[in-house]
Length: 469
Length: 104
Image: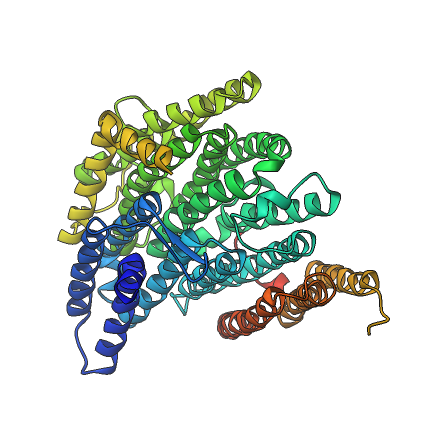
């Protein structure tokens, strides 16, 4: 019993252990920022390796906590993203006063996400969700003296409080009509009852806020712009990925009796999200805002895949999130290095970057090609599988509009590539020295972007895990 | 035992929910916005307790959920107030209309 508990919750235990190690280091003697970051990077690497060994399936605490190979894989993806973000934040954190606090906040949030992914009960799910958002709001405010940072944090905490309140009202209605909170028991009690539809809409609205689907996306760009770059990449990759995993599993298991209702809902939401993300991304000047709207558009494409409702859809969503981790973190890594060295964030500042920083330019270009979905990179395969999964329902309007929007998105992604390689600039950015840690992170990201697309075992492995369950 | 029907209680909680939502959208002071969020959360609490007592008295899930909501609301309010205080240091105001540097 005792060992069962340790093995099933090993990833959560590892994150808790890291938080405590950091706390004790902070309480002990003064250390340099470098020593903190070395320790935490090694710990994160060990944490990632630990995720691959000794995995078991099981249920704990009366179905509150469940785990299986798929859930472990999802947690491993998040662990990998956390490690890459930690490596990339080196150049920004090196001069910062509060290094351990930064990691404690992000790791607590990661812990919340793990509990959320593993939850088998609406209570546990809600606890995980709140545990993952509240520390991030504090982390957004991490540049304490910057006006934009505090404005972004204010917007994030109020909109997330509102969205989780909506979600809770939905959960309370669901509880009132079904009398249970357990995921496996809920589907038997759900039907087209109006009160349950109302609850369903509120719950979907709560989810939509967290993954920034179109009518609920307004906080995204402001928070992304205000937050420090490392926190922005955490928000856009890890937070979004974790909620997406849970969203897919809740939609497919708990709300399976309402499949017809949610199909129409996802259909409209996905088209709206893609269109709004694309239209607003075209007119952005700030690089972080641009990436915010690009991530909104990407979520729209993910929803196209979600609309399929089969095992292939789940596979394609997880596969796409894995690719999205690599390509988006490569782009954010370049922004992070450039911002911490020069303080410039606008796309126009990147003109002529190739003359002075060829390595950074290539990384950014590959990331942009992958986000746009140009064939040799993994982004193409990710989008391809999403559209295939969405096409399973035979709704060709959805697929053709989504495919057309991929072409529109090419325009703004390639605009960045053009600015880097072709536009003349009399005062380009000075040559930036890339720290070793960031180089490692770039190497991992680029290797992922290039190899995952052509390595079919990855897709097959995810698919086999899903069919297994 | 109880003479108040469930629908009356649900009416109160729904009214509280929409009062909170109205306050959230119309108030300009950040502390008042936070109070509106608390109103919404309390309407959820009333819902849970009422459903538990009237419909499913054999289990205690609703009451447990309420206790967790109260705890988390406190944590959320603490972080929100810390953020608002820091925003006051940089903006010298806690009016949401003064924190509109980033748009579109």
